[in-house]
Image (spheres, rainbow, N blue to C red):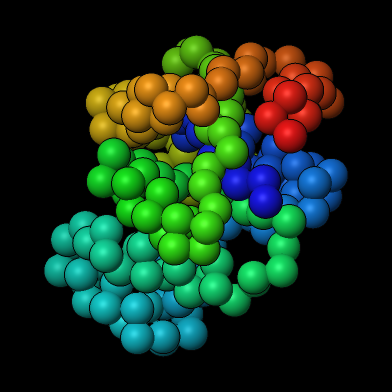
Amino acid sequence: MLNLILFGPPGSGKGTQAESLVKKYGLLHISTGDLFRYEMSNDTPLGLEAKSFMAKGELVPDSITIGMLKNKVDAFPDVNGYIFDGFPRTIVQAEALDNLLAEKDQSISGLLELKVDEEEIVQRIKKRGAVSGRADDNDENIIRNRIQVYQSETTPVYDYYDKKGLSHSVEGVGSIEEIFGSLTQKIDSLL
């Protein structure tokens, strides 16, 4: 099994690259945003729990997020592996993901970080916001805050997997095809 974590700040191109990697390697793309939308729109028990926390303006506990992730993994046992996008965001989540995979006699094959500098990210997200109309993609202060939160809370996950020899950085600036080529070269070296 090939189990990858696609890692990088908001606007680094994870979603775009994940689509192509899914096709090339026959993997299942698991995006936490998609998981939440699915579970909440279908009023599943976990979706209802998540809604109750969000309605109070509280963060959804890791146990609920992990439960959603486990449901998704269990629903697709016959894939060649998974691309985790937007997860894990914390060391606690990384440990929970490792435990979930260990229960299935699997592990993370590698964490692939898309390196993109802050100014490039701001411009990308603002450009995306002009098309999507999302208010949070049009406000530079919100964008920069999201980058700061990523740097302070999420970048330790890179170090967590780096200590296991599993973290790899790929330049996230260039054409979509160039970045994809760099990612596939790194993935092929993991196989």
